Length: 413
Image 1 (cartoon, rainbow, N blue to C red):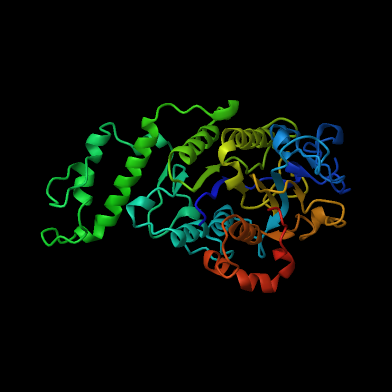
Image 2: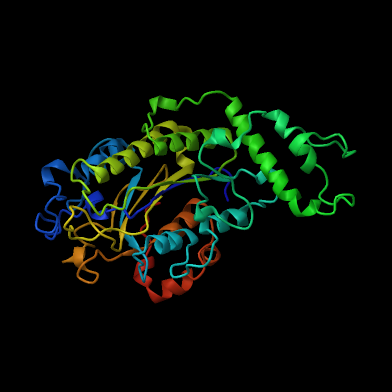
């Protein structure tokens, strides 16, 4: 993994309504008949610049990042890409299964408890070495499957929760060559793994060193004082906003290369909301958070990607509770200094007639497999080979042969 390349991913849990996120205005089926309470009028949505798609007005915090003369004729960075109609063959409408497939990278395999990003990280770094104890982290109350594997990747809800009040007194110090003068945690695990007087030492030695190293890195980061975002960046005053600000802090103060988090609430079966309400509020929060990362991490922006995922989209027709139900494809957000901004898979050339009901006359069918999106990220951002994709996402080549159109590169990088 190239030394400077980094990734922050946000799982939008519940299934984001891609149709009201990036609106297919040019599709005649986007109307008040199919979406009586959710339909966003044309004059209130944001112009994407491609003459077909519009952005939900809640995404306005991303305007500076999205805008560019080559996209919509407006000044801006042009580093925000919206990838529409992303999914996978055999789409599951089960939250549990689809979240599992998106994170283990193997659609249809509900048993493998190992993350596709973990495989990539574990291959790039020996996670048993103390110096690699904090190359990735999950900021979540439970382990993110995308980062789960045999070797430990730290996971915690708050950075301050991964330390102890005793600080360095708890961590102590590793022993010298005599292996008798260490103190506290590092004293226990700082010596050799094999010790005839401690028969089970080798079984826990690596884990103990990793925990100690992780705590030491986080303690060092916190010891630098309260974190102030750069360039006037303002994060949302929410749990996700706090986690994104902590992610930025960790990107600056630690060796972390990959950080993941989750934002729930996207299961909008009832009272989803048109311009205000649960879904617009969620979109606004995500947009404000990504914009804050853009402002705050300017010194790393060329080497950073911010990516969103969600397990599926929502039904094209609104239900009887002013909401939407589980469906197929949805939208991914990708931002970063090397991103070619714009809207992908939602334009007059690629969006066919009746596309909103192209799967089972009820759902928006996929155009691109999510593994192809990450295939482009792995190859163009992290410098991986095409052959390695089958290791990170087993079955990649077979899926590509079975559905070649789903794996045509979008070239957003």
